[in-house]
Length: 81
Image (cartoon, rainbow, N blue to C red; front, side, top):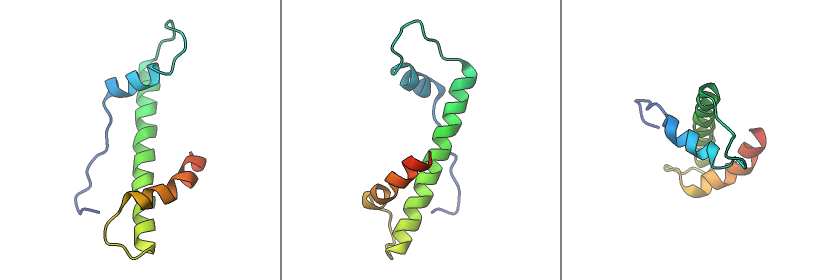
């Protein structure tokens, strides 16, 4: 990973639209706190996925993370979340 850590963030509007697209009723509303909580959960999920993919690549003596590394850690990652 790079020496400088970049902040992972998701736009509030993007998260809101993503969550609202799964609602079955049009009357269902999404609160600001729920959106903020989901943004934080997505941030943690992405950070953990990147870290696990990095560890997988290192265990295979690879200098670069490939999609295959992510695919190998994804089942356990989804179970943990």
